[in-house]
Image (cartoon, rainbow over all chains, first blue to last red; front, side, top):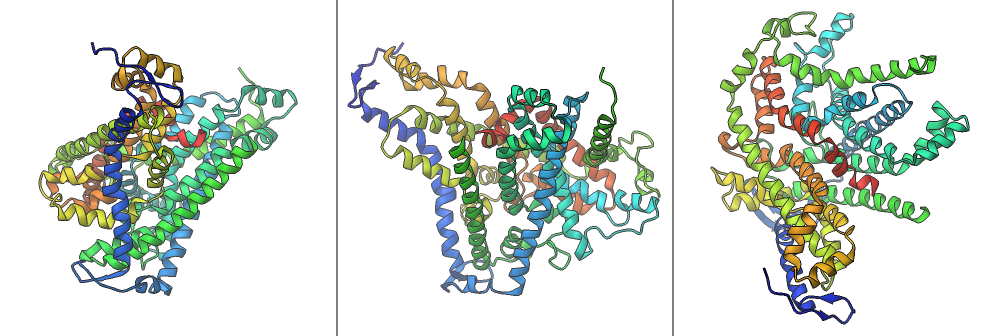
Length: 309
Length: 276
């Protein structure tokens, strides 16, 4: 048993043990591990990314002379515009179908049918897959010669498709795999949102004769709007950071058709012995700015929500 | 039992149509794992294995050190999870229960870390970890976990949970001579188990599924994680889909277990932001 501690009153009037000074020391002690990790592996590297982005480097990646904004100026090129366009398109085709598809599934599951629990778990199953395992399964499915995707097409008399090697098809194919990976999470989030809708509201609407489509558009979707906004923002941030599926399925190809911003950072900094850390860091700063814009949108929406609730 | 009206039938039809593409890759990962070479190379391709060909499963262990990959991933994800849970509990307690100068500013600093994408800072982190020699041999474990020993996400979620405690509890415990350390470990932590489990499950899944960092960091096959190992198996054995899918199916078992047995914690952790 520890001896009873001296109780005293702090200036704010609240009771403390040995005064705020001890409490202050303890709080710094408790925060120290997290602060140390953040300082060493987030804030210092952030500064170093900015430093690297304004410096040249030799072929081994060692930073060289100050080059100002040269790396940023180099981005005003057709190839970087292409990377940004690919990133935007990939984000669009992987976020919207996954959110709308999950919304449709959750709305249908709400129409009081049998076996809802089993169906919801079934739709959430892809969540057990990591980006790597899901991508490898899709690599097998998309395999041009022995993949089941072309096998099934062939069985119904359709010509085989070069899923990952045709420049106009590779991005939608990687996008489809990404939609599949994210659907389970979206279903879980929207189901939790539906469960949080007060039952009286739904029952009252039902008593008024609202069913099916009217119930969905009049009650469920408006009440789900916070979760829908959250999903769109979080999925967008997630899609912008997509890497594993591109590395496993296409390596940015064919002909840069799937080279997104994050993949381009990887390629410049790490792929094929490349150590172009300067240019890659400048692109990493662009990624940061895009992310900050997304976060600003998220907080803007949250702010508004808090306002009218 | 409800009557089957046309609308209800339509609901079932649409759900079934949606379920096919969702479940097919799950099914195919496991069915393909036990398909024989004949099933996978036949035309039109087999959808159902002609028998249980366990050879894929045994062969995959002789093709790649899958057991070793498992161990590496367990060490990496286990250490990250344990460390993040502990550092988050400590920081969350400070934010929720202790008065300190510049608390709001410090908390804002924690939140700021959530806005920095890992890919933005991966190059300097890679340079530092390489400079420190943590990319070879057993030190690889250290390189894999060091940057992820703390997270603002866990701190944020646990602080929310700790703030639910009535302030009287804190004052009463302090007057009883309990002290902050005992209050934390004897009362706050035991009563916050669901939230701590939610953080643990979330952190474990994201650590277990990491791809970019282990890919660039690990130089020795002996220290490869499961995710990278499976992707390399896919690159090396593209002509043997059965072998690849056996590796995938085996590597899925832990996360499937987490999804099935820890589902309520997953929902709780993953939707913490959505339902706030």
